[in-house]
Length: 280
Image (cartoon, rainbow, N blue to C red; front, side, top):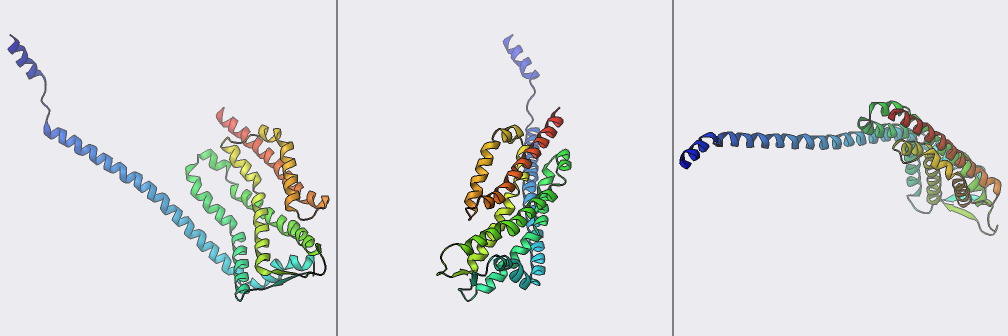
């Protein structure tokens, strides 16, 4: 009787087919191998897109820089040295190395090309980031390039027409008349470029507020709560970066930064309202 039960059980249990097992293993291996190239292609595709964007940006920068090179003398004599001549005749530029003027022209032309091609550079960055956004996020950010460019150009204009002349006038009038203010042209170019780039980046504060509010890291309530602290901090920064001890001059530098902070609050409030509307 036990032998009959054992034989019956053995007949009921199906024997595994080695051929089907091998086929299933081969299919699993093929699916895994297909998934790996797909992920690899996605990664390679991102690298290819970054490479393409960098090449396009480099070509555009070279073209604009070449166009600026045709106006190199105007850029050096009027744009670069103009604020120095208008501020005071007591400041004199001098070249201290044999290749100084060659380096000077190259830096000025390249910097002018970078400023003029900044909207295209920002657009290339946006084109790389945009595919990863949702449709409503792309629609809400369709004017981002214009906004970024306006903020950057406003900062450049503020640095050139306001901050730079104030600084140069102070430097020209400070100290004893027994010492001549002969400035190295390389030091002046570094000061010129650094001032304009710093002002351009500071004026991107509203856009930074927009990004942080968009991802939920910044709220208008937070900015309003720390408004007094921010105003004091900005006035201290204005006093530190302004060479003059004149209060009016410090306010000329500090008030635009305070206005940028207030504008950032309004932008943050609008973004948070839009985020709340999308969630509801």
